[in-house]
Image (tube, rainbow over all chains, first blue to last red):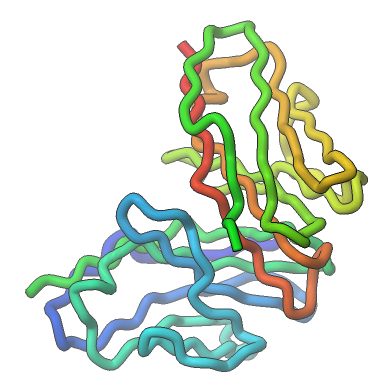
Length: 109
Length: 115
């Protein structure tokens, strides 16, 4: 079955500390993976997609097919990074995203 | 460009009633998807429409239905409401039906409360 696992419900760090939000997926084919972010009182928005291999707001994510992971990383967390982060898997050429449960990132001053 | 617009923002209905939610995609986007978000189940895919045709459906009962109009606007209907249907319903649009360089853009959602 296709599944996305985000093992941490809450990740609490201090400003300037490195951040890694974990995401593992289960899919036998060729996956498309995304990170979506939801800031307080804002809509869900795309942060990163694996095919772009880009860095957005200092965040990067690398698809590791061997470990079936797509962890989100940032070397130095900022307070404005505090938000809910969702990892999502898209398969089969449809706009059906399978979301993880989400990880709340709290960055403290 | 205006984002995805969902109306109404909030709805309160009684068990057994039916409800219709509306979504206007980003101009030029022809794919519209619907998701249900609840604290217990998280974000779950309901269905996707492209060019007025349902392309894919999630694992929801037949009480949940939708349609898409020729201008790409979409509506979602839930009949015989149950308490468990209380959720945030999100609409997302995309320029393509899936795959490739076409991420989803989400609306703010409609918060449905069933009493």
